[in-house]
Image 1 (tube, rainbow, N blue to C red):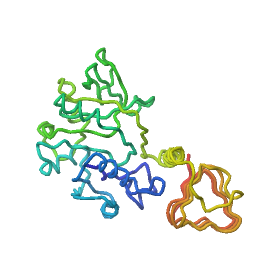
Image 2: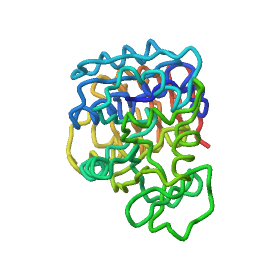
Image 3: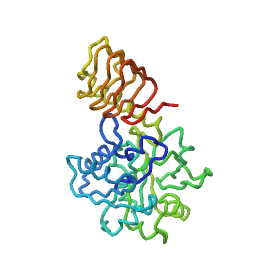
Image 4: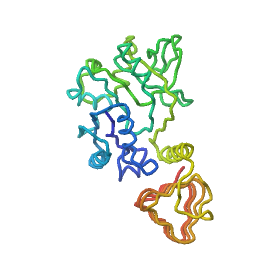
Amino acid sequence: MVLAAGLGTRLRPLTYYHPKPVLPILNRPLLHYCLEYLDHWGIFRYIINLHHLSEQVRECAHSYARLSKVHFSLEQNILGTGGALKRVADLITSATTLILINGDILFQPDLTKALAIHRDSKALATLVLRHDRRAEQFGLVGTDRTGRIVLIPPSRQHLDTMAESGMFSGVHLINPTLFHYFPDKSSFCIVRDVYHPLVLKGAPIMGVFAQEPWSDIGTIERYFATQFEVLQRQQQQSPTYDLPLTTDQLSSNLAFIHPSARIEHNVRIGHRVIIGPDCILEQNSQCEHALLLPGSRLARNTNISSCILHPHCLIPLI
């Protein structure tokens, strides 16, 4: 299940026009990365919850080439992570291990170890965790020597029983037995209202640490930075690809120009630039440290830096 209902308030004004899961990461919708990841792990039935600009999410999901069976859960009011899952509980069989993933992260951890621990420990839920210097900021999660979670938000006090600590990544493995512990309300947070009281009781809520790169696109600055993190990883894996520019036009290799973009005469492209499909850079324009989203137009004699250009707005980076 992909959680895709959020308003994306910290990503405004982009999310006035597009829901978070539809926003492109290196010219590909974030939702497609999530679906591809689930597809890799043999998922053949998808559930996607919807609220904000729901039709765009539907269209984006259906545009994923390998999408098989999908159920959309439209929420008239946002139900939270727990309420979203409770609303579709009847669709999930008791023999199923549910993979629940936040739709606003880019994270593709190897689940081999997590699935084995989840099965062998008979866990109600297994959370994929990661070490991060910002763990206290995001909410510290701690495990004991067996991998059982002993500290989870909103609790904050370090415990003597903690052997390892980090932050929750937004990927859960869930045993449907967990549904029996859901509160008697329609809207709630699964971490605060379900996992936290179960952890306090010593219930089998497990944590497994993963090392793969993790990106949260919850803010404009993080959305921008994630583009170049992904580009850098792709260039390291496949360092050569054709760009529709001559050497004197391109001042840095940390750049990506979609083949459908139109680059006019005497355009200068500086360091850290991504130019999306159907963009137009008119003559004598310049850009550096910039993300040009699909369909954007950079007017002639215009110079932009440290910003995101959208067809309807220009967003400066703080």
